[in-house]
Amino acid sequence: MTEITPQPGILEIDLYVGGQSALAGHAEVLKLSSNENPLGAPASALAALGQAAQGLHRYPSTDHASLRRIIGEIHGLDPERIICGVGSDEVLQFVTQAFSGPGDEIIHTEHGFSMYPILAHMAGATPVSVSERERVVDVDAILSAVNDRTRLVLIANPGNPTGTMVPAGELERLTETLPGHVILVLDGAYTEFAESYDGGAALAKTRPNVLMTRTFSKIYGLGGLRIGWGYGPKSMIDVMTRIRQPFNLSVLQLAAGEAAVRDRDWVARCAQLNAEQRLRLTGALRQLGVACDDSHANFVLARFADEGEALSADAALQEDGIIVRRVAGYGFPEGLRITVGDETQTSRVIAALTRWREVSA
Ligand code: PMP
Image 1: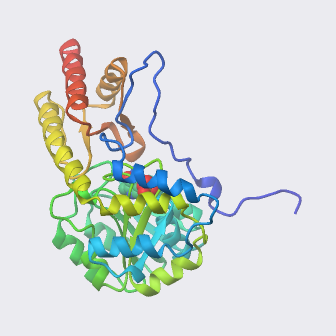
Image 2: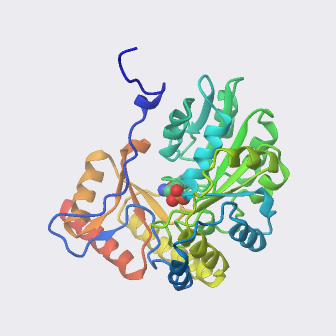
Image 3: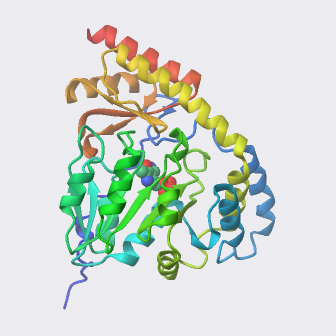
């Protein structure tokens, strides 16, 4: 062979596009495009980072025993069944890479998180997109797409960018009906923003083929630090651990993660603020004639009349220094995904959209 060729599937990967963070001509940009925490990072984690910096000449723990023990304590889970990664993205990479390869299929839903098809291709597997029903995961559509080649089903609950949830009974039915050779991954990146939801922990505790993934990037405000974790059957975690780099989490990630997970007041405060401002934003959008489902996450998917209207609202927001996320790539050309901010930020979004409506009416 005379040419360097990549592994099959790699050239089919559409590069992940992150939330825009700068706007020309605006110094005071309000970034609401990546579902980040408007309160920033918790002081407890920042203090832990400062302390941990004293030990940067040492390699970090290879087994994350201390962080796993604390996560286990707080969530009532067996630490032996927890695996930690560089963001939940890495945990998703472990499971897709360890359990699928060329010739295998990975199912995700049409409005699922954009990393899912990328992860499938990274593993050399084939992503299979199935339709949703009214922007909610359709369990029957998933079940009819399953075949002998299916290795994994990836579902975010709450969904991104829809913000909707799969009804609990439907999730149970899915886990009961999926054939034993298929792993169900319940991606709980936004769990803490949903009321009375355990992220899929109870299912992952009892079913032999369910993995729950969680992140420190949203409720904990540590997106920049990159920490996530997964919880599943011991045998699954053992397999995933074999392909995990021994020092994947730094001394800083481990220390800040431990402090953050202990900080229950922070979680309660962020969830409360989000619930209040999400309600305001949703109400204001509807009053302006913009459709949106009730969101269970820290963002709202605003659905405009058509793509032209979404583009014009996006341009108006940008004029006011506000960056939100276009979600045409997720199957919503008419949509804008708006991260829920604090009270002042939400007021700024509402004011900008109100002005836009007045001008465009
Ligand atoms: N899953 C979903 C549904 C997400 O929206 C995100 C972040 N945008 C992730 C996983 C990955 O998050 P992280 O790698 O920061 O933990």
